[in-house]
Figure (cartoon, rainbow, N blue to C red):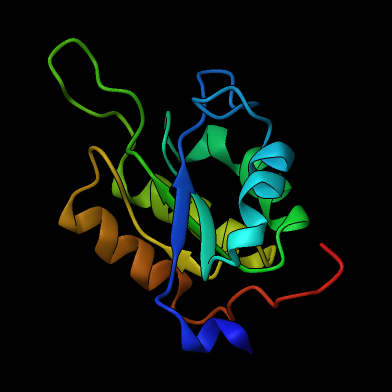
Length: 137
């Protein structure tokens, strides 16, 4: 595989508030088509508005891409005091569901996630196999 002879490129995109488009205005299909020629090691979704609202978009990206998929959700949207509402167990539960659906290769956290979020996510996905790559994306 040619990817083994190059510096790994991992691309990630943030979604708009509706979860249907990237911050740049592209659909996830358009995003994938604009970056696939670079043969990235992984593509993914980061930050946005919490894990729950990101699962449909993650499903779309996993469906169209033929490379590893990463997911690094924020812990929700901060309140006026700057606190994030999504608890570690909620983020971890959603990560587990996404992994069980075969959507993930790489998972982590973004804004508002704490070491406890990462511990919970790690424990939640530890016994699940990563997403299998296909060539019919």
